[in-house]
Image (cartoon, rainbow, N blue to C red; front, side, top):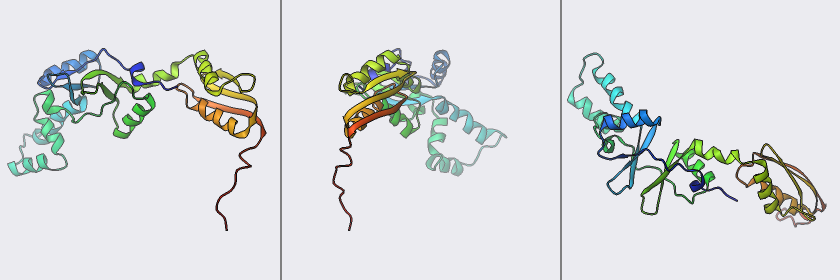
Length: 230
């Protein structure tokens, strides 16, 4: 029931070798109209990611240090390179992708559910994840744009999958889907079956919402013992 990264990832990948020059990286970002690319070693393993922000560090620190024809003393430059701004300062001195990249890269695998990939992006504040094999070699890339493809599934496709999941039929709920919104209706033998049906429908990729219009003959939830108390 889960769409995995392999189903939505892009295999036409823009990437650079760790020895690629600053100019080569900038040209690639512009020509491919992307804001970042993976950085690879000679065996196609992902070492890091280089983005527009990494390249702009050079201009940012150049302006900060030399904007008014002022060059700070050596002590100040050392302090920047070792302090909280050290990463940006070091990148401002970089000439190759390996020196400019952010490393290590946050990556995913082809079999990861798209929901998990989306959570990984959100956790680390990134817009894309390189997709790697067990040896760390690049297979593709998945972006936020790719992940929302799951919401483009047809109503017919979603309805079929919901029916299979909730066992719709003579003894199961009635299922309708409109604009990826699922409605479950009908009467089930037990209250717990209705709860399970709703949760199963909600768990299907591409479902925007589930409207619960189910009824039941027996409230087995109310029959459960209540633990605790005085």
